[in-house]
Length: 391
Image 1: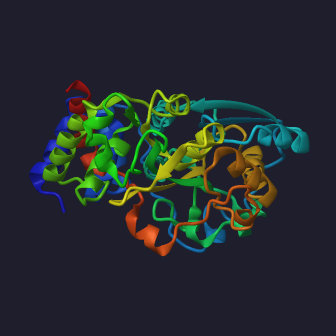
Image 2 (image 1 turned 60 degrees about the vertical axis):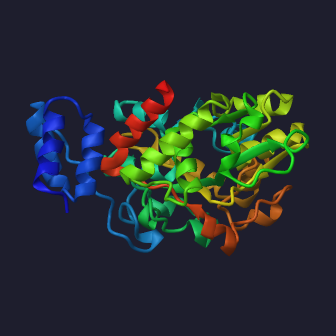
């Protein structure tokens, strides 16, 4: 439990405007505050009527989550607005859905969870489906920014593999349909780097100065150096974070840049020899340049699942469920993963992939870790990332 001083400091930061409302909500929930109490505090601080964030519905069988089975979303709408990561869907997925349903899809893209989060927090995005990573899904659900699923419309739910049912970040799959899964490791040019890298220490090796990049993402970069030292990639311990900052600043001196999806082309061209990158993007790049290989660091790495969710107030919820059920079909799931290079949570689709992406082995799972919402530690991480960027 937090001390009285910690609680007082938290409220004072909100009142004085030094702590954004979203960070206050995350920290207060981590402290154990109730949704009702949070609503009262926010209303008092803003002078406006604030709807208290509702916690997710109680855990239970997947078919019992969300609204009652007899809930009816009405007739199918004629439009659907999707907001997804770039290069993260097969080229014909949307066109095939439109052809089958007659629904016209508007499809926009983003490059980071933080970009998505900011879009939804200001409200009125107009999107019907967005695709957050697990730890961001937890934040969105805690802030009452998601619509629970109506499972009766998901007739293909049976195809979801047990590994992705009832995840810790979304109990009972109340809000999300698993989309793709992957790991965050190291893409490298086998014709440039020998012997092959073993782990995160590669980025501390000045031998490859200006030929390496890391992701432009605080969770991935700081998390990598926490794993290097045998710590959790969601650690809130000040000593752990300080050591990670020291390593990250040392690595920064060897990096060409902090860059995300755009680095694929640089690895293909040979301008970059090693990059912190997701396994699927590495697979995409290797189709163009066979010398590009993937390393799952020996110290461990992030294991993540992105999910399709429906933002609160989405205008086309029935069409959103139709798209979700569409991608749960084995043939559709296979085509998506064949294009993206990421793993499919669809158990029936795994064996159909042109290039198999098997589920993690027991040995690999021991090295993999799911990122968690940082709660009250988010500010410390944000400050750390600012200091790394300024160094």
